[in-house]
Amino acid sequence: MEKRTPLVRVNNLCKSFGNGLKQVEALKGISLDIYEQEFIAVLGASGAGKSTLLHILGTLDRPSRGNLYYREDDVFSWSDKKLARFRNRTVGFVFQGHHLLPEFTALENTMMPALIRGMGRKTAAENAEALLVKMGLKNRMYHKSGELSGGEQQRVALARALILKPEIILADEPTGNLDSQTGNLIYDLLFTLNRNEKIAMVVVTHNEALTTHIPRRIILHDGQKTSDTLSTETVRPL
Image 1 (cartoon, rainbow, N blue to C red):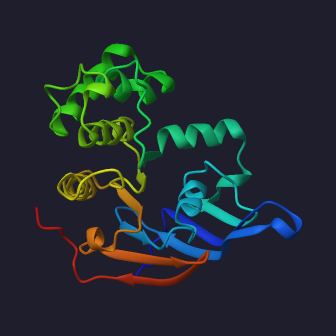
Image 2: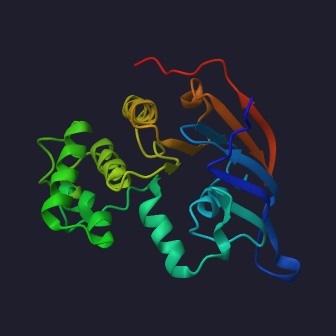
Image 3: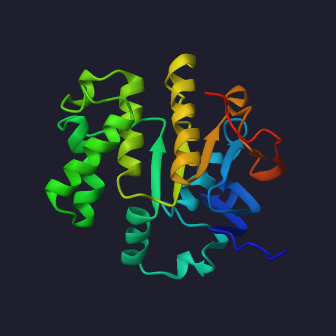
Protein backbone atom coordinates (compact mmCIF):
# COMPACT_ATOMS: atom_id res chain seq x y z
CA MET A 1 0.00 0.00 0.00
CA GLU A 2 1.34 3.43 -0.95
CA LYS A 3 2.18 5.57 2.07
CA ARG A 4 0.23 8.83 2.26
CA THR A 5 2.02 12.14 2.51
CA PRO A 6 0.74 14.24 5.42
CA LEU A 7 -0.87 17.59 4.74
CA VAL A 8 0.93 18.89 7.84
CA ARG A 9 3.83 17.32 9.71
CA VAL A 10 5.01 18.45 13.12
CA ASN A 11 8.49 17.32 14.14
CA ASN A 12 9.80 17.61 17.73
CA LEU A 13 8.02 20.90 18.37
CA CYS A 14 9.14 22.81 21.46
CA LYS A 15 7.98 26.19 22.72
CA SER A 16 9.31 28.10 25.70
CA PHE A 17 8.21 31.44 27.10
CA GLY A 18 10.30 33.77 29.22
CA ASN A 19 13.99 33.26 29.99
CA GLY A 20 16.33 32.13 32.71
CA LEU A 21 14.67 30.97 35.92
CA LYS A 22 11.26 32.18 34.75
CA GLN A 23 11.24 30.10 31.58
CA VAL A 24 8.09 28.05 30.99
CA GLU A 25 8.06 25.11 28.57
CA ALA A 26 4.63 25.11 26.92
CA LEU A 27 5.46 22.36 24.39
CA LYS A 28 8.05 19.61 24.96
CA GLY A 29 8.93 17.80 21.75
CA ILE A 30 5.57 17.16 20.09
CA SER A 31 5.48 15.25 16.80
CA LEU A 32 2.38 14.39 14.76
CA ASP A 33 1.07 14.08 11.22
CA ILE A 34 -2.19 15.59 9.98
CA TYR A 35 -3.66 14.19 6.76
CA GLU A 36 -6.06 15.68 4.23
CA GLN A 37 -9.70 15.57 5.31
CA GLU A 38 -8.87 14.39 8.85
CA PHE A 39 -10.92 15.50 11.84
CA ILE A 40 -8.81 15.71 14.99
CA ALA A 41 -9.63 16.77 18.53
CA VAL A 42 -6.81 18.01 20.74
CA LEU A 43 -7.76 17.57 24.39
CA GLY A 44 -6.16 18.52 27.66
CA ALA A 45 -6.57 20.58 30.80
CA SER A 46 -5.92 24.30 30.87
CA GLY A 47 -2.20 24.92 30.49
CA ALA A 48 -1.52 21.64 28.68
CA GLY A 49 -0.24 23.44 25.58
CA LYS A 50 -3.28 23.03 23.31
CA SER A 51 -3.63 26.64 22.20
CA THR A 52 0.12 27.05 21.84
CA LEU A 53 0.20 24.06 19.50
CA LEU A 54 -2.71 25.42 17.48
CA HIS A 55 -1.11 28.85 17.13
CA ILE A 56 2.09 27.28 15.81
CA LEU A 57 0.14 25.05 13.40
CA GLY A 58 -1.45 28.21 12.03
CA THR A 59 1.93 30.06 11.98
CA LEU A 60 0.54 32.70 14.36
CA ASP A 61 3.57 31.89 16.55
CA ARG A 62 6.97 30.30 15.97
CA PRO A 63 8.42 27.33 17.87
CA SER A 64 11.54 27.60 20.00
CA ARG A 65 12.77 24.38 18.38
CA GLY A 66 11.43 21.84 15.91
CA ASN A 67 9.85 22.02 12.49
CA LEU A 68 6.46 22.43 10.87
CA TYR A 69 6.03 21.08 7.34
CA TYR A 70 3.17 21.79 4.95
CA ARG A 71 3.17 19.30 2.08
CA GLU A 72 6.81 18.55 2.98
CA ASP A 73 7.85 22.22 2.77
CA ASP A 74 9.47 23.70 5.90
CA VAL A 75 6.98 26.46 6.73
CA PHE A 76 9.18 28.53 9.02
CA SER A 77 11.88 28.79 6.37
CA TRP A 78 9.47 31.01 4.40
CA SER A 79 9.51 34.80 4.36
CA ASP A 80 6.98 36.69 6.47
CA LYS A 81 5.14 37.65 3.27
CA LYS A 82 4.80 34.01 2.19
CA LEU A 83 3.66 33.02 5.69
CA ALA A 84 0.97 35.70 5.57
CA ARG A 85 -0.25 34.34 2.21
CA PHE A 86 -0.30 30.84 3.67
CA ARG A 87 -2.44 31.95 6.62
CA ASN A 88 -4.81 33.85 4.34
CA ARG A 89 -5.26 31.20 1.66
CA THR A 90 -4.68 27.80 3.26
CA VAL A 91 -5.73 28.04 6.91
CA GLY A 92 -9.07 29.03 8.40
CA PHE A 93 -9.17 30.11 12.05
CA VAL A 94 -12.07 29.90 14.49
CA PHE A 95 -11.48 31.04 18.08
CA GLN A 96 -13.46 30.95 21.32
CA GLY A 97 -13.87 34.69 20.99
CA HIS A 98 -15.30 35.17 17.51
CA HIS A 99 -13.18 38.32 16.86
CA LEU A 100 -15.82 39.89 14.62
CA LEU A 101 -15.38 43.58 13.85
CA PRO A 102 -18.30 45.28 15.63
CA GLU A 103 -18.69 48.11 13.13
CA PHE A 104 -19.34 45.70 10.25
CA THR A 105 -22.26 43.45 9.37
CA ALA A 106 -22.12 39.66 9.30
CA LEU A 107 -21.74 39.86 5.52
CA GLU A 108 -18.89 42.37 5.69
CA ASN A 109 -17.07 40.37 8.37
CA THR A 110 -17.35 37.22 6.26
CA MET A 111 -16.02 39.03 3.17
CA MET A 112 -12.97 40.46 4.93
CA PRO A 113 -10.36 37.73 4.15
CA ALA A 114 -11.43 37.70 0.49
CA LEU A 115 -11.05 41.46 0.22
CA ILE A 116 -7.62 41.26 1.86
CA ARG A 117 -6.64 38.68 -0.75
CA GLY A 118 -7.72 41.09 -3.51
CA MET A 119 -10.97 39.47 -4.60
CA GLY A 120 -13.45 41.84 -6.22
CA ARG A 121 -16.10 43.16 -3.86
CA LYS A 122 -19.03 41.78 -5.89
CA THR A 123 -17.56 38.26 -6.02
CA ALA A 124 -16.58 38.38 -2.34
CA ALA A 125 -20.12 39.45 -1.39
CA GLU A 126 -21.71 36.67 -3.47
CA ASN A 127 -19.44 34.04 -1.93
CA ALA A 128 -20.06 35.38 1.58
CA GLU A 129 -23.83 35.40 1.06
CA ALA A 130 -23.77 31.77 -0.09
CA LEU A 131 -21.80 30.74 3.01
CA LEU A 132 -24.05 32.62 5.41
CA VAL A 133 -27.10 30.97 3.86
CA LYS A 134 -25.42 27.57 4.47
CA MET A 135 -24.87 28.61 8.08
CA GLY A 136 -28.59 29.34 8.48
CA LEU A 137 -28.02 33.11 8.63
CA LYS A 138 -29.89 34.23 5.52
CA ASN A 139 -31.98 36.69 7.51
CA ARG A 140 -29.13 37.89 9.73
CA MET A 141 -26.37 38.76 7.26
CA TYR A 142 -26.98 42.51 7.39
CA HIS A 143 -26.93 42.64 11.19
CA LYS A 144 -23.86 43.86 13.07
CA SER A 145 -22.17 41.46 15.49
CA GLY A 146 -23.71 43.13 18.56
CA GLU A 147 -27.15 42.28 17.17
CA LEU A 148 -26.36 38.57 16.88
CA SER A 149 -26.51 35.82 19.50
CA GLY A 150 -23.33 34.02 20.57
CA GLY A 151 -24.10 31.05 18.33
CA GLU A 152 -24.84 33.32 15.37
CA GLN A 153 -21.58 35.19 15.91
CA GLN A 154 -19.65 31.92 15.95
CA ARG A 155 -21.36 30.80 12.73
CA VAL A 156 -20.30 34.09 11.11
CA ALA A 157 -16.74 33.42 12.32
CA LEU A 158 -16.93 29.97 10.75
CA ALA A 159 -18.21 31.42 7.45
CA ARG A 160 -15.33 33.92 7.53
CA ALA A 161 -12.87 31.05 8.02
CA LEU A 162 -14.34 29.28 4.97
CA ILE A 163 -14.52 32.19 2.53
CA LEU A 164 -11.21 31.34 0.80
CA LYS A 165 -11.84 27.56 0.81
CA PRO A 166 -8.99 26.59 3.14
CA GLU A 167 -7.48 23.13 3.27
CA ILE A 168 -7.50 23.08 7.06
CA ILE A 169 -9.57 24.73 9.80
CA LEU A 170 -7.97 25.33 13.19
CA ALA A 171 -10.58 25.88 15.91
CA ASP A 172 -9.59 26.90 19.44
CA GLU A 173 -12.38 26.19 21.96
CA PRO A 174 -15.03 27.14 19.35
CA THR A 175 -17.87 26.34 21.76
CA GLY A 176 -16.26 27.61 24.96
CA ASN A 177 -18.62 30.59 25.33
CA LEU A 178 -21.76 28.78 24.17
CA ASP A 179 -24.48 26.76 25.88
CA SER A 180 -24.47 23.01 25.24
CA GLN A 181 -27.25 23.07 22.62
CA THR A 182 -25.58 25.81 20.59
CA GLY A 183 -22.21 24.12 21.05
CA ASN A 184 -23.60 20.93 19.57
CA LEU A 185 -24.89 22.92 16.58
CA ILE A 186 -21.38 24.31 15.94
CA TYR A 187 -19.86 20.83 16.15
CA ASP A 188 -22.50 19.51 13.74
CA LEU A 189 -21.54 22.26 11.29
CA LEU A 190 -17.86 21.31 11.61
CA PHE A 191 -18.66 17.65 10.93
CA THR A 192 -20.77 18.57 7.90
CA LEU A 193 -18.01 20.77 6.47
CA ASN A 194 -15.39 18.09 7.06
CA ARG A 195 -17.51 15.48 5.32
CA ASN A 196 -18.95 17.54 2.46
CA GLU A 197 -16.21 20.08 1.76
CA LYS A 198 -13.28 17.71 2.51
CA ILE A 199 -11.65 20.23 4.85
CA ALA A 200 -9.23 18.96 7.50
CA MET A 201 -10.26 20.02 11.02
CA VAL A 202 -8.18 20.40 14.17
CA VAL A 203 -10.33 21.36 17.15
CA VAL A 204 -8.79 22.24 20.51
CA THR A 205 -11.03 21.76 23.53
CA HIS A 206 -11.11 20.69 27.16
CA ASN A 207 -14.70 19.41 26.78
CA GLU A 208 -14.30 15.68 26.22
CA ALA A 209 -18.05 15.09 25.95
CA LEU A 210 -18.25 17.11 22.72
CA THR A 211 -15.52 15.04 21.04
CA THR A 212 -17.11 11.60 21.43
CA HIS A 213 -17.58 11.09 17.68
CA ILE A 214 -14.40 12.77 16.44
CA PRO A 215 -12.38 10.07 14.63
CA ARG A 216 -8.97 10.96 16.10
CA ARG A 217 -8.22 12.33 19.55
CA ILE A 218 -4.87 13.64 20.76
CA ILE A 219 -4.38 14.27 24.46
CA LEU A 220 -1.80 16.74 25.76
CA HIS A 221 -0.54 16.89 29.33
CA ASP A 222 2.05 19.36 30.57
CA GLY A 223 3.20 20.18 27.03
CA GLN A 224 3.59 16.58 25.92
CA LYS A 225 1.47 14.26 23.79
CA THR A 226 0.30 11.43 26.03
CA SER A 227 -2.24 9.79 23.70
CA ASP A 228 -3.04 9.71 19.98
CA THR A 229 -5.92 7.38 19.19
CA LEU A 230 -8.26 6.59 16.33
CA SER A 231 -11.92 5.93 17.07
CA THR A 232 -14.20 3.46 15.33
CA GLU A 233 -16.76 6.29 15.23
CA THR A 234 -16.29 8.20 11.99
CA VAL A 235 -19.61 10.00 11.54
CA ARG A 236 -21.37 12.20 14.05
CA PRO A 237 -25.12 11.57 14.09
CA LEU A 238 -26.94 14.72 12.96
